[in-house]
Image 1 (cartoon, rainbow, N blue to C red):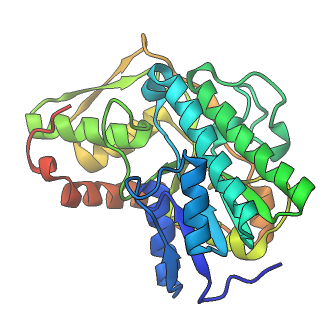
Image 2 (image 1 turned 90 degrees about the vertical axis):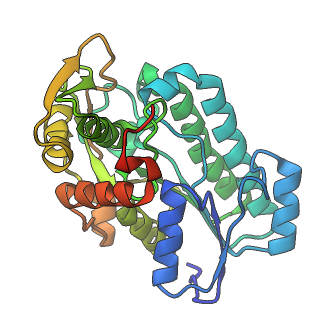
Length: 320
């Protein structure tokens, strides 16, 4: 297994996003000095010629492929073509360039939505492609499954050391708090915050509140990504999560206590719940020696503090 030395040239694709920024923070904390990044204006990751040119010029040795188009149920339902096109193109170009220009190792980051809607719980890695996907995020899931298979194909045909990790639901600093495209936890934080600054008591949550979800702080995911880059070289994709779950109703209660304790929660049952339950089997990752560190309560508190400090409109009424 190739060692990622402190002076290694490391490309973090998607460094400005929720996950990419956390990976950069983690690498900097560990003392890595040659972290390569490119903004969307500098490099369109959907353009194979542009990505080839960038790899030829910068010659990264290790690649964290964490870029992509992401969003919650609403975004997935209304922009399915964008979700499948952007994500398939991004992982295809970067993986192919990594092969062409001799990258030592690449880690591709997927999502727990790759698993069937009615997977066994907790969801083991072997559940992949054993049933129908959740309709509300099918395009995104198909793109991410293709990414896993792409890495495995390059490993089989060319011997490339390309690995894949599948995280559970993420949250943390630099999350997306736009209600039209955000995931459930940042959307809740935003809804409760809006209600507080506008003097409203009632906060509406989509669905019944009964689905159960697992949440991982993005700094813990970044730590797991670096851990896997240093210690894992298998063909099987690995789940990354906490192994702990919470109902949407209980999650809403936690956010209410932290953001707007006087709020009343109302459930809009005309809106979809999504997958009934999503809990990852993380036994393989635990066996390698990694576990999460941030509790959900601590993570929500620190994420809300980041939101207040970094969103200019957080001090007043937030426009939707």
